[in-house]
Length: 138
Image (cartoon, rainbow, N blue to C red; front, side, top):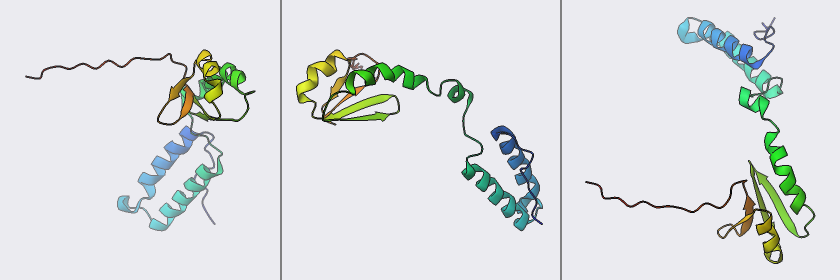
C-alpha cells in the first residue's frame, strides 16, 4: 500500500514544509530508502502539476487584478480601432498593424512609438529623457 505523504497539507506553505521534512527524513544520503524518497517526490510533483495549490505570494494575492483595472481605460480607448493588433505583455500594451493614420490618436492616448519594433506602446509612464553622465575616472 502506498503511503500518502501529503494528505494533511491544506495550503502551499504546508506542502513545502512537509516536503522539506520528508526530504531530510527519506533521502538516501541521510539514511533513508531510495524507493520511498522517489515515491514521495513523485507525489509532490503530481500535486504541484495538478494545480491544487497556486504559487502566489502576499503581493500577488492582494494585487492580482490591479494592473487590469489600470489598463482598462486605455484599452477602452483603442479597442474600437480597425486593423490593429493589441498585445498585453506584463503591464505594457503594444499596438501594431495599420497604425500610421492613427498616430495622432495614439499620442493623445499616451502611447509612444518604438521605432525598433515598429509598434506603439503604453506603460503608464510619461516620456522620459535619457541623461548620460561622463566622468573622469582617476
